[in-house]
Structure formats: structure tokens, C-alpha cells
Image (tube, rainbow, N blue to C red; front, side, top):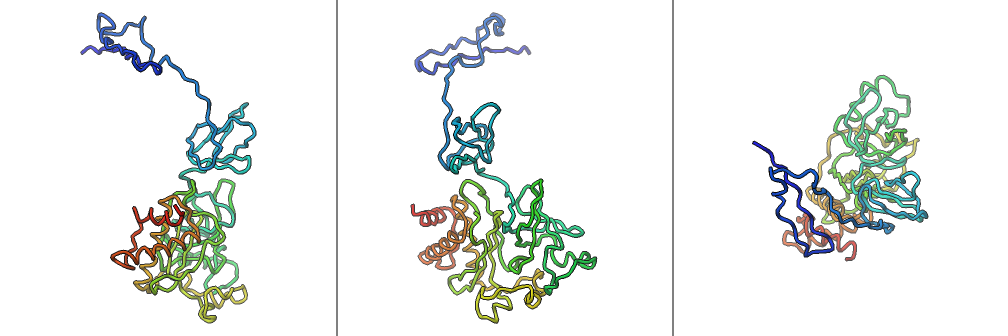
Length: 360
């Protein structure tokens, strides 16, 4: 069967909406093919010259390859690049433009976590090796947790031996969740963690939440306090909240330590090296959850709904926003038909909660 190549139809001129469009392109040649000598161009003849826009206002979304500014007074930051022999700053990622004095940078709308020394992170053990664990912290690479960077049961301070290497799975196994701190960074971006503090270690008695939205103003942000204990409503007792800078959140039932039980308060004592042996026991690496009351589980689920509602509506997740959002969610449940058992905060309810927190 012969193939007929048709000439493209001429386009309508941009400045002449009433220009006629030729419809006899089928008869461009006698044999059904297109006349090579009089072939029509494939591009429009009308060219428009546009002046590049300048994106210098904060939280304006740009795409990769888009010109941010041509003004030489600005300096380029993360997420931008400068072509050779020009002063044009171009975005290399899709995100929002942020301005710090004369520095322009682009925060990605979606990005992997970039570790920094001192960050508090929540991670999951994915691999057990001879002298270390490999931990998923939501970064481009797995983080390393050396055996020498954890507290031994009983608070013993000594050099790690071959016996400890053989019992390495008794401390952390695959699938275990833990909270740790970034101690060191490698040149390729890899991180080294440590849990040499009583506030770090294995996580139990709670629920894990992985939130997205890193960049663009939403998600977990670095703040003064990433871990705190708060009083839950409806007789649920106390709940611990851990906001990992990497976007992993842990919400759990608060369990009093031996020091807190003696003092009768939360956070009233600080355990030093001398009395660490009295507070650290073998239960710190136990994977068995304690009994959790129904009221406590309900409030943990409500806090989880608050965190997800904040992220879905592009709000930051920190202690102030979570506490305020939780109290507002409790009040919203009181006026609903189900009462305190209503923990749903998705859809329109999440938007109403975000509107109350932002004052819109």
C-alpha cells in the first residue's frame, strides 16, 4: 500500500485571528506526495521575543532551566547554577525561590533528606554487619551506626569485644526503629550516627509516621526541641513525640524511667556517667511493647492525624504547631457526633484545622 505524506497545514497568525486556514493541503502534488521544492516549514513564522522574568520574591515556584534573574547583584545558592561568562542565575531543580539578603536559592518541592551534624533523626535498621548497623534515615545513602557508638546494657563503659560482635543482633535487629543523632559526615554524603545518650535508642510502644513535603515550607523543620512529652486529653496520660529532622516521626506512650519515678516528675533528673549504670538496663534493647490503654492509643492516633494534616496542607511540623493542632483537634472532636472517639482529620477537617492554625 502506498504511503502518502501530507504537507502540514499553515498555522493561524498570532496577530490575525481572522486569517483563513488553507484546507487544500491534500492536493499539494499530482501524485499524492508533497512538493519538495515548495515544502512548507514545520515551525511558525511568527516569533516573539520575551524578556526573561526575574524571580526574586520568596516562595515563587520555578522549574529546572528557568531563569531566576539576570541582575548581577544577586549571588547563586543551592538549587541554582550560573552559565559560563554570564550573570544569569538559572534554577536546577523544581521548587520555591528563597532569598537571604543577596543570596538566591531554590528549595526543592520534593527532596531526599540531607544529613547535618547534630541532627536528631528517626531511622530503621535495614542491615546488620560485623561491627555496625545500616540505618535507613530517608537520605540518598544508608547511615552507619557503629557498635562502639551505642550504650551497652547496664551502662558499662568498656571497649567492645568479639562477644559483643556475636551478640550484635540482641541490641538492634532488622526492622527495629531507633532515634539517634548524626555524629559525623563522610565526603560522599553518608552519615555516622550515635546513641550515646539516654534519650536515644530503640523505640517502642508507639506508631511510626513518615511524612513527605521536605522543602517548600512543609514537613518537619529544625527547631529548638525535637523531642518532648505532653499531657494527652481524655485521661490518656502522657505521650512522647519525636520529630526526626529527616521527616520520620514517632509518637508513643510515655514510660517513666527509674529516676523519674523516684523524683515523681518528668525530666526532673539528668543522668550522668557516674549513675548511668543504675538507669540503663537490659530492657532498653527489648522489642516487647508494654500494655497501652485504649485512651492512650486513641490520642496517639489523633496526634498522628494532626501531623499528617499539617503536612498535607503545607504547614511546618514543629512542637508549637503540633501542640496547638492537637488541642484544636480535641475541641473539634467534642462538637462532633462521635465525641472524643472521632480522630479523623483528613479532607475538609484537615483544611479547617490548618485554617485555624494559620488564622485564615
